[in-house]
Amino acid sequence: MAGAVFAAMFWHHSHITNFLYTWGPQGLALGVMFLFGARPSVITGAAIVFASYLGFYRWYLSDPRDVMGWLIYTFSLPGGLVGGIVAARWSRVRESSPIAAGFVAAALIIAGIAVGEAYWHYAV
Image (cartoon, helix red, strand yellow):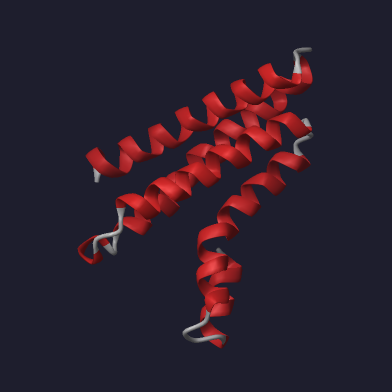
């Protein structure tokens, strides 16, 4: 997020700003999962879920009237990060196949994002 703010200050009307704003939080989440010792299959499952979530939001917010919906996208990503950290720790504790670890990571990240979405849609 700090990279997006820095880019917005110096590169007006640039694709770099959009790139950092949309992919930066996902890259940060994947980097934190890597620091927590996630297996490659867990990071792969997380990357697939995060990219699918971004694609869904791009499709969902295609109407120009929904411009503030990107805030909900950004603020619900920490739930996915928490799910990813839990998946990273779980994958180190339990021995499982790479496919099972990827699916468990995807399920935990989807659950974390769903909690974030529920909070921002109904509580605020």
